Length: 119
Image 1 (cartoon, helix red, strand yellow):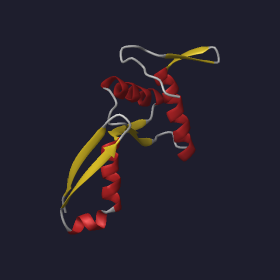
Image 2 (cartoon, rainbow, N blue to C red):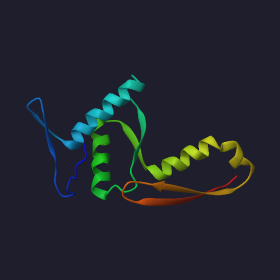
Image 3 (cartoon, rainbow, N blue to C red):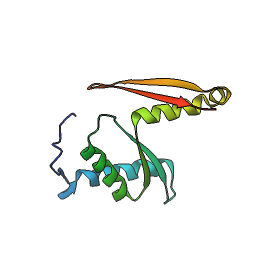
């Protein structure tokens, strides 16, 4: 389902006769997902968001993480790709410095991220 939410409005969702803000619904979703990988109460998550997310969307995601009570680091998808690449290529990066361009061809915009990995 695709829909657009104006940046200036709060969205309410009715669930079993209870009104919840969209951030509260997302917080519940984050909690359920985190329970599936770790039964511990104190959890650390990395949550990615699209590079094209607006400031309002980013803040709503941050509020949802706060509501969930889970410590979450928010990073955009381009940085997450660079981190994953660095982790995968760690032995090669240790041998020599390299500059890598990451191109994210999305549905609404294309993003270029250039990263210099040092030894």
